Length: 396
Image (cartoon, rainbow, N blue to C red):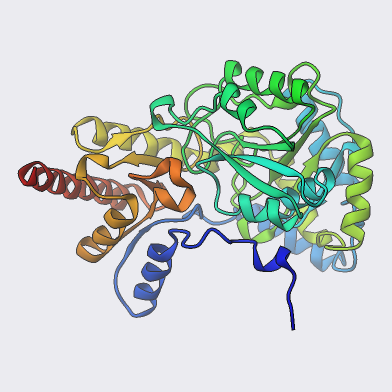
């Protein structure tokens, strides 16, 4: 029996560079001690007060079908939060609650892309981006950024690839690069979207993890609130990755259609999860900073370690829970380096190639283990790279 091209071509690019991750997980299952610096999973789990709010809601009976758009309480809470942070008028009618940010990304693309339309995204990219666009029936087209530009996108390069496009997906603070897009970058993107009549889908799940600079939502820029769909999530800001609670914020007409889509697909998010999310968001900045602070500290420790050597380059780590490290001096690809590092030192990192061709010759390091082990692993990576670089020089 024939399957649809939409499902069989979700990840049609061939190897995706995730073999290192899967191999590390197999090693752990086989009893090996592996230092895992691969995926963005907090080492400190969901705060007990959030779990208590979740438990209380469930025990009080909020375990049945929840309202498909989301509870009024959570939608109002998110609307008030975004309005306070951006100054853009926002009500519950601008908000749809989704089962995590990933479902929000898919819904946003379904809303604006017809089959065969082009959806643009930036390389390096979060691993699911091209498959999400294809899943919506669109053609996924990547625009490269460069390490030399600190992976800040250039509007002119996006413009040159925009023929036939209806949408552009961006992510700031960025996974995997750690880049935070500055105002000049975002204003260039906004002008391009207006000129090209593009929908902008803005993935802002790391908006509470900014170490250098300022998070600017493009929805705040002139002429952009009516053409921007913001995707957010409780996963990173409140360490609620497994709770699967996210949202899409956009124009009322779009959200009304997305509610209809949710009725026919996800049928909402459990009410007790939403009540816990409302509690967490109302807990204020102190809780968010408590969750972000380990990564802020580890980023500072990493800068100190990396500044003490000259083999491994650090792409400016302005936000998110990752470091993008340049290991091109070793002569190896990111995938070769990651495999050799796992074999020789049982340290697992993600090859840059996992996130697109623009990050070739890099590795992504997640700052998701305790400070002492993190510093030890990073020092080992630097020493390992220096030894490889010396061999590279000797061989030339």
